[in-house]
Image 1 (spheres, rainbow, N blue to C red):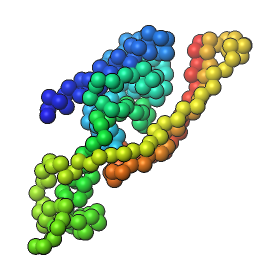
Image 2 (image 1 turned 60 degrees about the horizontal axis):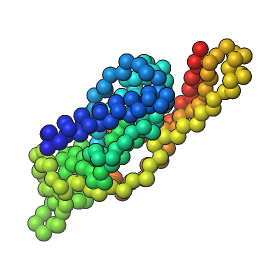
Image 3 (image 1 turned 135 degrees about the horizontal axis):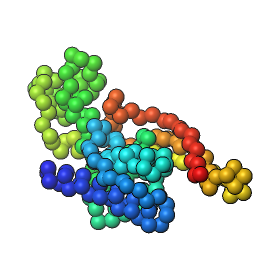
Image 4 (image 1 turned 30 degrees about the vertical axis):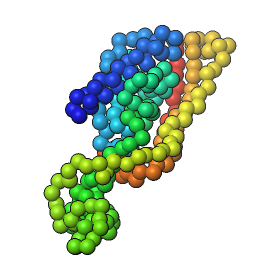
Length: 222
C-alpha cells in the first residue's frame, strides 16, 4: 500500500512536469527553470486524493498567475494509462488528482465513529452508533473511544458534479499595445469553487475551506 501511494505521488509529479514541457513546446508557457513540486495527500478528500503546488511554485519564474498556469497544465495533461481518473484546479492554483470513483470518507471516520460524544459531536454519533444489544448499527459502540480501524465500511462510490473554476480574459489589440509601448496586454477574472454536488457527504473542515471567490488579474509584457 505504501509503495502504491509513493508511486502515485511520483506519477502525479511527473504528470505536472510533462504537461509543463508540452506547454513550453507549443508556446503556451514560457521556458524557465521550473522544479518539480512535492505531491501530498489532502487532509480533506473533497480536494482529491493527491495534490501538488506545481503551478504556485512556478508562478514567479513564469510570471503568470498560478491558476492560469494550472489551467494550461490541465490542457496539456494526458492521464491515459495512469493511476488517475481526473485532475482539477482548486483554490489559488492547486492541482488535485483523483484516483477513481471510490473515496475513503474520513468525515465518517473522525466525526462519527471516532468522535467523542461529549464534545460537540455530529448528530449521527447519537443516532447511528451502537448503544445496546439488539441495535443494528453501522458504527461501533458509542462508549468506545478507541481509534477507528481502517475498513471498507467507509469507502463510498462518489458521483460528483463540480464547476471548480471559470476564467474570463480579454487580450487587447496590437494597435493599442503599440500605443502604450507594450508587447502584450491581457486582463481577466478568475472565479473559484463555483459549484460542487456530490453523493458523498464530506465535511470541508477548517484546514481547507470551501469558498466561492474571484480575483482580477492584469498580465503585461513589455
